[in-house]
Amino acid sequence: MPAIIFDLAFDNALGLALLLLGLLGPGLSGVVFMKLQYTESAQKDFWDRVTNLRRIGLQWYLAIFLYAPVLFAIAAGIDIALGGTGYFVADWVSQLTSNPAAFLPTLLFSTLPPVLEELGWRGYALDQLQRTRTALAAGLILGVIWAVWHLPLFLIEGTNQHDAVGFLTTRFWLFMIGVVALSVAFTWIHNGTGGSILASILLHSWTNFTLQTFEGTLRTDILFYLGTLWGFVVVVTILYGAKTLARHDNIPHPALKSEPAVE
Image 1 (tube, helix red, strand yellow):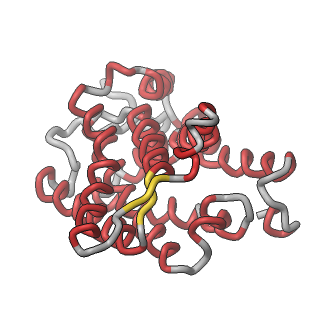
Image 2 (spheres, rainbow, N blue to C red):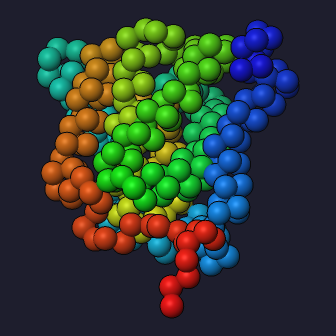
């Protein structure tokens, strides 16, 4: 918000500092509330869910790394079948032959925000929403919050949302609607892995990297954000059930300090 008020872009030191502070918001809030509310054992489990690679089974690693590429490929394939071009690669890919480090900015902005965000979104907020709501409802609610949280980025130069998407454009609405669908997929991954926060960080990072590597035509984007992303939500809900979006009841409910001890 200060960047908007003072008309700052994210191409200078002060702008980047404000961007970093904004990205810190969800994760820092999640960690603070976790420290205030969780029991000592729940706090230890929180950090284990952030760092423990073994909490993610092989099938979930496959789901994490296939989710975005496969759904985007389906949308692009349909667009090509309808006579379109389907997709094109980002500019940084063509620069690799002359500059092998051209991928580094994309890699940085694909991985840093998920680490800073997911400690709050799936690390804390999702678990709390699921205490009193179904997994599907929790995912949808968090998706709306997550989408709205992105709004300031559409008004600040130097962000992908401002420069590539634009405010109140067709792609803007596709982005906002698509984020809600993504949130349900994140809930599915989160619950399927028993609450692995690292799984959400990996899914968030790989989805970002995929969509910053392969860009779609407008029709491809419509098919992706309205078609395959939401089609996946429907399929997962049917297969796994809206209550847990998982084949087990091991949904994470970290113990709170205010809860009575079990004797």
